[in-house]
Structure formats: structure tokens, C-alpha cells
Image 1 (cartoon, rainbow, N blue to C red):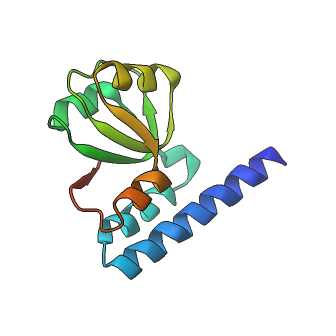
Image 2: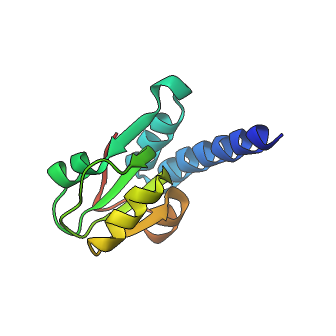
Length: 119
């Protein structure tokens, strides 16, 4: 039953993102919805070392999947993801960054300006 509820939440998030992308003329949210709508075995998992390597200081990043704690973050980043490992969340905060859910980032920035996708 718990798995079914999680599946329904994810399905709702995918639909909301696609709708927001169309309404706001923000193709980034439609792209994130496609990234979330992948089979579990092909789900995106991004390690911190990759975020640190490709992101610039104070970037806003959205990961349509999970952020894992392998590696370190050396600059403040705002990262939105479906889920975070506890180590990843702790390391991002320690570097002066911020973590949030994808829905929170969409409500803060409906047009998706300045947001990058990593997957």
C-alpha cells in the first residue's frame, strides 16, 4: 500500500511538471517530467562529485531522481531532487548550499530561469 501511494505521488508530480511547463512556457519542467517518467532501473542517480565538477558557485540544479553522497561539494549550490541520501543532504548544507524538493523549486521559480538539469 505504501509503494502504491509513492507511485501515485510521483505520477502526480510528473503530470504537474508537464502541465507547468506548458502553462509557463518553461520547457525545463517538461524535460524534468520526462526524466522522472523512466523505469526504476534507469532512474537518474547523481553523486556529489558530479555536481561539484559541473556546477558553478550558487547554481540552481534540479535532479530528476536521487542525489547520492559520494564525493564532496566545495561550493554553495541549491539542489532540488526527488530524494537525497542523508550524507548528500548533509554535505550540501555543510558547503553552504540548500536542498529542496522539485515541487518547491517549481513554486519558487515557475519559469525555470537559471535552473540546470543534471541526470
